Image (cartoon, rainbow, N blue to C red; front, top):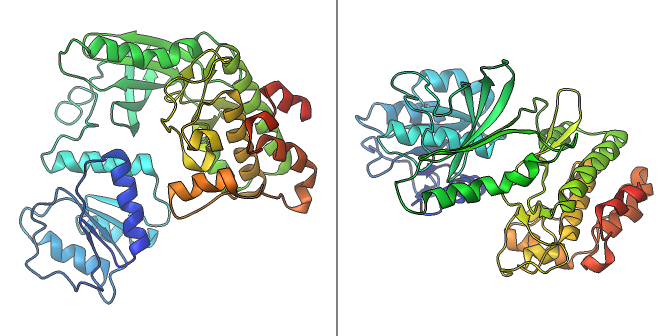
Length: 396
């Protein structure tokens, strides 16, 4: 249940939840339009209550306190201003989230934990034995658990320390599955995404240290990039020289994976990490597709990726090749230079429509020297774009 007076905020939370749990049943409640919930409201039939701090004439802390007096009230996640955190946590909220800075992965991790508090096992439950009862005992021997980083429907990602040398690594573990005949096949598909990447030695591609399959899990151990993602870097502001440097590094990484027949297909700032020295590392090949680049993509009609960064052909489910990744890179270049996404709309389909039909975005005068390259990368037709990434590097 989501309780808040702002419709846009309720819709945003619904989107976060249903993106991860498509079958979730959500009740969105506006306490201004529908009236304040009664003192006897006990949250029955809800696994989690998400309470915003926009409640009309009522204070969020007062409503939270009233809910918490009800016996067996479900866990409450509270969305408010940072200066409310201490009082809200003291009042018994299961989780506090800054209203203006909701991070999807962090939200899903906490909601998964809250479901377990309610006695429900989320589909993204802990992949570590004894996570709550007897301390952390990882399924993958040789790694010491530090913290959970992210979850998805079939896997979870952890920051760990490797016992052999003490370096920090990222451990991605596939969710335990029932003992079915398809289990090993599923693990094989999981690892195939990374096998070719593990063979590459490129400074701007994340290093894969280990791949493994057992009877009840599969895992990938990769380099930990401690400088945060490009999304945060864009939010903080990037100067022109750094934007061009990042473009070169990302393009170089893309060129390498394209040479071995891999398309990324989900290139976005959240999948581009920085090391502590400021260098780029391309990660997350979960949507990567191995194919012969001279052949059309089989299974057209499927749409994968993130709408803000999708090429027109990808957004319409048409065949894609390396030129689609180049388009996505052009979108990222514009965002690095301006701090804004070039195409925005209220719905995913609205964004997809703009990729195909809207006029090409114009850079501010201070960055006009990059307009010609940007126009070529964002051409609506793949034939009008650079045909290989090396042509982007040549233009730079």
